[in-house]
Length: 235
Ligand SMILES: *Cc1c(COP(=O)(O)O)cnc(C)c1O
Image 1 (tube, rainbow, N blue to C red):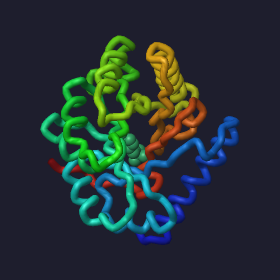
Image 2: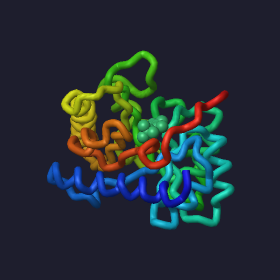
Image 3: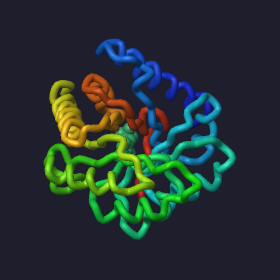
Image 4: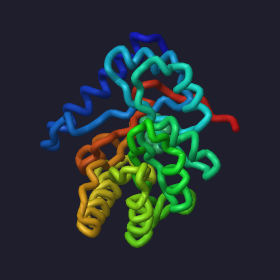
């Protein structure tokens, strides 16, 4: 894809977010676009920074490190959104601005310990398996969510910012809204129990953006609608 096309696709996504926010009586400035750049080249990321897109989401640790190194002169905030192996906590802790996919207690201490003192605390979102799918990561149910939240709260170098989910795909707007509403309710319940604000709801991708905005998303993670189709990851 050439740069003009990339920038015009990005602008369309921005406009769509703003219009959808207005449709649902939400402040467009309260919805942040995370550009999911996994499996797309650093050049495309650099081009988007020129128009003010500075938050990028990556799923694979090594790919995020390589891109962060290539683009280190740019003020990019890297968001890690993929499944994390416990032996890769250090890389995420030293590179990312926000970790969206925290799904188990085992990762909490290493993420905090490896966070350099020279950086602000790593913002973390707890990933919830909202549809109870066997194949998906994420905590299931409120008790598990609360235990993970409490584990994060005792760590000095982590800030608990909110929740994230990836629902089972659906093409119907009302069906898409249901799991996002459930995530918001879980967030509200967790806020009440902990007596603290958890402002971020990371939900909504290219195919279910409207539903997520309707239900309160504060971060939408958009890949395909900006960058086009991805190559298939070969392991
Ligand atoms: C790949 C990915 C996205 C982006 O998905 P698109 O359908 O390309 O917009 C968002 N969130 C997560 C967790 C992803 O892995």
